[in-house]
Length: 361
Image (cartoon, rainbow, N blue to C red; front, side, top):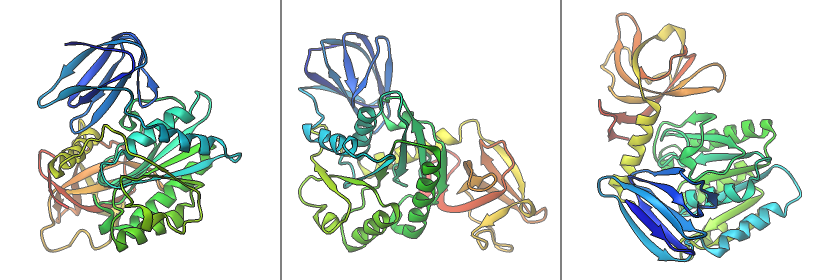
């Protein structure tokens, strides 16, 4: 359907949907759309299409999708403060860490920062530290992407490498999550980037969460910390930090997701990285399996366990699902889209069924 949006108004699109710019000028989080360009909005996500000039969109809505219009931009003016702070630093690369509670718009802010930092020449790395709601790699991982181009959302970035944590909540693997993020940042810094944007999970409330985030900050040593604060929920976390902290307000177009919607988004990442998956047989003797006691010799293992599959060194090849262990032949049967021969497999704790729907974590 055609939708005309007057200048200085925003079309809010809740997915699953898509919007194609027929005419006029519009942008998404600072990403300028070209005429005839179509932007897809995933289920459980909301994107704001701001009309710089009067714009006509061709909008396609899926089941339970919706649109709404609002006056002005939904991007707070305060979001320009971290852009100025980052560009004002003389050093390169600049590491930026984004904090905020769940569904406060961290991924949106990260996208906005990326689009305002890149000019087609500099290289920006986005390190996704949200194991439960990953935008770049599959859920259960922390991974990164590199780009010199503007994008409408982080999901459009191509995964460069990842660290398989194996759970969808950092509370279940705090040490491993920090280990993975530290390893990925170290790898990023070897690739001559100008900016490193670290997006984090929304676990910020409570003493344990504060200790986890402080430990993460100590490990990653960001040059700038950007916090999205609704009330004063970040105060216990940011008080006493050495790195400069820029606090911004949330967008007026927040999209609060239910636990079921968050689960659906995780399952979409499994499906994305298991597209065209086949059943592969992996001899246990030809690879390292971690942890070592994850595949029992006698009792029947849990089928449907999510796996992280690695090549040589720290190269993440993809995910797989353990479907069977042949104890007689000492072989793992794994559903995966990875065609290369793995040298290491990491056993996670997420279990999915044949439809790649989470059974438990």
